[in-house]
Length: 318
Length: 318
Ligand SMILES: NC(=O)c1ccc[n+]([C@@H]2O[C@H](COP(=O)([O-])OP(=O)(O)OC[C@H]3O[C@@H](n4cnc5c(N)ncnc54)[C@H](OP(=O)(O)O)[C@@H]3O)[C@@H](O)[C@H]2O)c1
Ligand SMILES: NC(=O)c1ccc[n+]([C@@H]2O[C@H](COP(=O)([O-])OP(=O)(O)OC[C@H]3O[C@@H](n4cnc5c(N)ncnc54)[C@H](OP(=O)(O)O)[C@@H]3O)[C@@H](O)[C@H]2O)c1
Image (cartoon, rainbow over all chains, first blue to last red; front, side, top):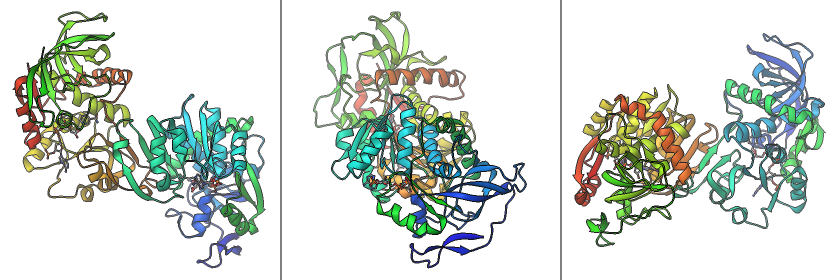
């Protein structure tokens, strides 16, 4: 089959379509013919050698896709069924092997391309804000990078759950997109310290910056507030003042979807389909695709995402 | 009335009985004649000026007591009723004003002195391990300072909940006490780095050391592990590697009981009486009183607790 690989291991821009082996199915996996694969920031990291796939996962980049079952393997699935897939890797290939627990139906009314744009963001946002943090109506949520792939989805989902939503973004234009998606409090992180505006106000923070924002995030939390760190774009190591945690009973968590066990991923997938798919079906939460590229132009898609000019998601099409 | 106060604000050893005003009741409070008051490490900190009472609370030291209702105020309680009390302060006085939500029955078969020894530890341990961390059968819990007031109680409660219990303590003798109380894994923190023995094994850690143990605690957590920090005996500021949190989905929390709202404390008290009092009544969990002192000798009790020679609790008697 064909798949995107680095032709030069030291050059993240050397992504190109090459001939490689079609994946072998393990027990409980199906072979999916990929129609479309979402691009994630994690993919950029992996191309740079910073985010190796978990043991046993495909070496091919790509954390989500949608396509058609080519070989149901030992599962009871039907050949020809359309599915969306949460992947530990492999989305940038012609075919990918997917554990059955990571298959999702195509959301009602969605094309395969649209489906490929929502799998990773829906599972990430729901598993953290819904399943883990237990976001409730009336709470205030801060979403860093509100105009990104995760952010554009998280704003809408939080509004549907009845939250007040604060966001950070790097330009007035991006903040305007956030406002259109429902965000209530708009902060340009290049012009303003968000923690001044939000001191003690946030019940939940979905963070992608890590070290750089730790102190300001803690300052922004309300009593019983939870900081959930899913990205480390601002570094990993920093000083923490534990004395800030105790009186307000603060929680700091870190999570990655990719490192979860098969059972853990299956649980996330099940809960996401149950709780989020109905919101997609009737348009209460929408996909937000910035652009699509042919799979062969993955390098260009990575370059665009890296430029910071993207609002929402990029998708590669076979 | 009489109460223990610092006769010299700069000398924590100057605790002595002095004449002071009897507390005025606020709406919803009862006046309790104190029979016995537990001694907590927080009391030592307060005597040193490091742990000021929350706004509105008594300036008198003392976080727990048992005694007899002298004046039910506007509540429907009976004068003469025996009660155990969770306090924001005031236990080291002849009388103390207590919000009704912080009154507990005397555990079945307990004397007032015994009751005064379990209120703070039961509420602290249950609110953190039961209510917050959701400790389940089969989990592994690490309790730092297993032979202390909190520790001796936590070991027993965790065993009753079906956990495997690891403890740290500073001597073989103290570890032997922990073993008798049910602890499964015994670590002398003066001789051994607990995180070597426990790498990746702990589902929950109840920590009292803060900064000093942060790195080792994170290393000791299993996937989805929770570190709950309730004491900062080893300092407040240190470096954190947030990269350690994400792949194992670790949680770091800090809490204090004393800073909770009236409603928050009432909720803790209700849940503790419901879940822990039955275990006290039939002896599945026991109080662990090291020694009792007359209230007038509070200074000597503080000196003893400070010496590190105490196993379990000290109680002051009127
Ligand atoms: N742990 C997990 O399971 C998991 C899963 C998926 C994603 N993630 C992580 O989540 C993050 C977002 O992923 P994505 O796919 O949505 O990437 P993306 O679309 O490229 O978004 C990156 C975002 O970072 C924002 N940003 C950059 N510097 C910032 C700053 N100083 N303050 C606030 N925001 C800043 C950008 O905002 P502007 O464009 O406005 O500058 C942009 O919205 C990445 O770090 C990714 O690794 C984690
Ligand atoms: N946040 C809250 O709501 C709350 C409520 C109650 C208590 N606390 C805190 O919990 C802690 C214990 O309180 P307590 O009343 O039980 O005090 P305690 O009886 O005086 O116990 C102190 C404990 O610290 C242990 N310790 C000292 N250095 C240690 C080290 N390097 N490693 C491991 N353990 C060490 C001692 O162990 P050895 O004796 O074996 O040396 C002892 O067991 C205190 O920090 C207190 O402030 C917090």
